[in-house]
Image (tube, rainbow, N blue to C red; front, side):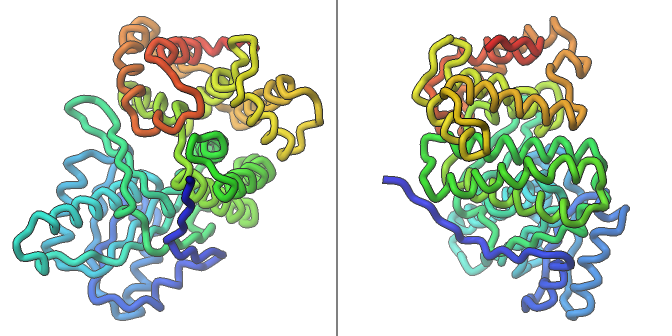
Length: 388
């Protein structure tokens, strides 16, 4: 038996940000980062709150790869201010931090004798990048600096109540970030389509997300002012999020979390480098014998318009498409290309593989995997060598 749920109300379109004025709130806790404040995006939201006469507290201290300490600090301020609405405005890091605050807020309430001391706030997520799909997912990734690892949380408590998709907030995103986040969309959709908990319902969103991303990602990358391409990528990201929050992900994300925690490479870029290797592994291309998962990849390839050839060659064609997009987006094909020292990387391979094996995303990978196989994938993606 498989399940599919969709809790979050989605408000999508150019200038959809104005929707916040229609929501009655006594006090808002606005979580964002310094970049959103400095470039004036946060001001747009603040102006809407002011025009509606809604008081708010601004917390702008979220960093890239949000830390446990940042979440703790934000949670303390959120509880002290007794807010009834939590708004996350920013990229995946900001939304992940706000989710973790929501999670621990509710968990804290469960431990209190006076449970009325904390009320669950309405949670609104407003993404300013098109990649994570975090606005409709029950996942959050937080960095534990002490262990140099990324901790993946998953719980329905973290699902936003409302997601606002307004592409005007993404127009200032630089090309490199558009590339990284766009490849994250493609990775989300591909992993969700293949995940163990995938259903026909989740696969519909995954397929549509891929079709839209393949059509519009390069356009958004080449011309950041293209509002249609920006809005389409916002929607593709959201659809991929709906797919993977129901179906799960896989070892592509598990390994990206481990590498990102150790070497600080951006999550989307890590996913893009790993993706061809993971498709090949799951499909059995590296074993020279197609797996059942390979047949499923072949079915997806047909849906994406790859010619009706035998399944093995369809999977190879899918890998080549991913590599072509990565090249068009000027993302290198190996971790070596980003200046990571080879000896340092190889020394970390065993520990990174062990971390990835325990990652929550590994549970939904379509093919069972061992630590040794993860180590091999890490070494392959360092060199970029892939023979299929």
